[in-house]
Image (cartoon, rainbow, N blue to C red; front, side, top):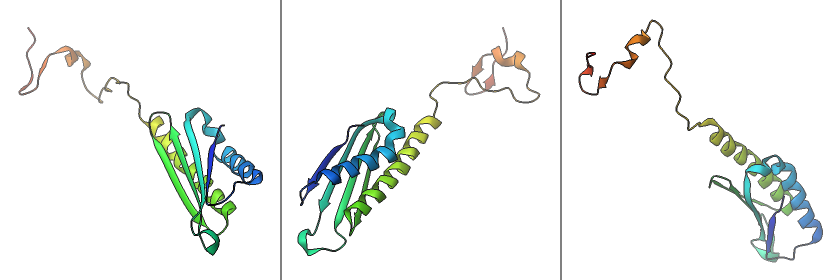
Length: 134
């Protein structure tokens, strides 16, 4: 899985890049066939001042045009990556399940108990109901 990773406010290390790629592969590897694009933005909001300011933003573009955007802020960047990856996994599962639930094929209406199917070919006029056979 190809992941576009961008760092803002600090220098991206090889270890951080490898950790991010590995964590996303574990979390979203199952959805490989559903993904069009996966982008991660890592940033240090406050700079050297510290605090809960390490942000991980994950953007997942799914086939079918749907998009999932997850943002997590933590004091530790690795913790932000972990939480964002877990949330992205759950959000992608939800989106994929939604697309699987809807079938766009028309199915014939089931016959109700006791319904006489012989009348099924009688024309129906939308106002007054069934028209007489001719």
